[in-house]
Length: 332
Image (spheres, rainbow, N blue to C red):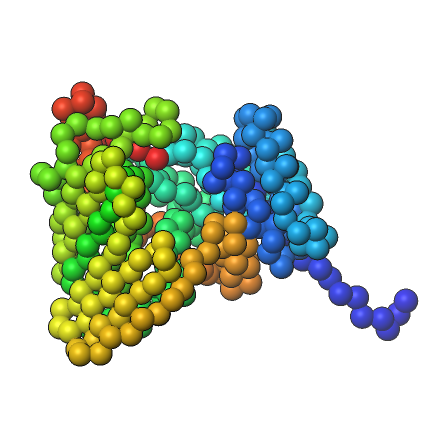
């Protein structure tokens, strides 16, 4: 009728590529967002797609009222007006997944899981695809999105972090070191990364995921003006602890498993308690931020690429004793 105002509801098209465990956690998070959305998930395995459908039964029904779910065995079936895509495949097929996406349905916004890729040549190839299609892209190193670490960025603003130590048992150096290097970059400022592998245990170990490898021992080096040491103890279940020191008088000790953080500034010490979000709690918040504002706290692709490449080079060189190509390292 004339004179009546009509409310136009924006229905977003959002896709997850890769219906493994991590992809399903992303899907759950998107389903719990406040967005009106058509949720698409792509995986060549029909069993994985069915598992993705099942995981939505764990989402409170009220969150699904403004959502629809669409499984696909290939990116060719995706709508051509995608607003946001999360690529949650393993690293060995991630560039192929990105190429397929760009061939059939390049999105406005993209989040890539990490470790990004296994070959050095994949990084500039992905950058070119992203640039050609004008896709705003982030890498999912989520500590930047956690309020506890955002508060630490303010704490260290006038006295940046100049040393970081991460110590614990079997925390997966190959797949997780990038998280801590990204954290250091966000707290201590950007700069060139150099990685030393002389204190790594010789050779490689088989990862918990078939076809991938892991490392133990210690990685060390510099990121800009900051130094770091990352230590993983093979066969140990000891939780990892993070220590940060500034150039002058500030220190922080973080126990993520207990959700406790000690801040030291001069002679003052303060205990803070925190809770880290699961991926299934975070993905929806990231999607809301991106689609409502065009931005989110995650690491832009170019910044993450600058951290990934030196790390992959160092791990690849270390693994040559296992007859691996120095420009290739099968981590994920």
